[in-house]
Image (spheres, rainbow, N blue to C red):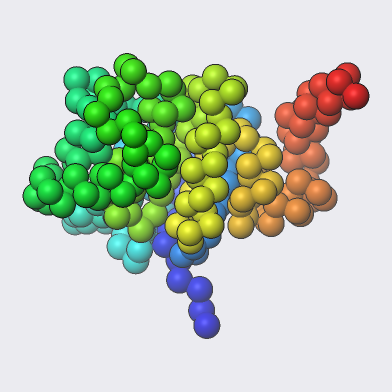
Length: 256
């Protein structure tokens, strides 16, 4: 049976003035896949993600999400975005609203759900991320990890076909990273289609169906985690992984 692609990207370019950030990206993400995008800062990873739901408008190329060409000028991008959940580095919660209200506001305004239905779906998704007991709390009363889990619950409450994660743990203290990654592992195991920009190499190795290494606005290498991490084909990939993984090994050696 032919696999169904949730995302199809062909010849994607993105420039900011004279700076070409994406230089011809071809990438597909099949339904149910977890694709982790890794690479150095400035390689274009976040820009790629933001182009998928047109938070950044591509300079050239085409992007299809669930068969709809979002780069078509006649595309109803708001309709497409309703099927896409996005979790950013920052949590972007409304500080004056409770956790429950943060998770219900888009349901009620965008999906036109009634209060009772929105509250029930909010409760289900807060339970899913382990925060059922925080529904009446305000964001300022939560840790960074808890706030990010609320942001995930908010996205899930919209019943997305696809989840985009833009370095969701980068703003967290190290001891809070694990709780967010645990929620993401659960989503992956449930079959959610996910495109994840991350610097968490252990997570990518463990959870990804496929790992994409970007550098200089291009995809240098793409493959199963065992291949990309275990026997990368390209010197640039090996150099990057050596640099980001070696400090961990050094630390482990010092503790042994």
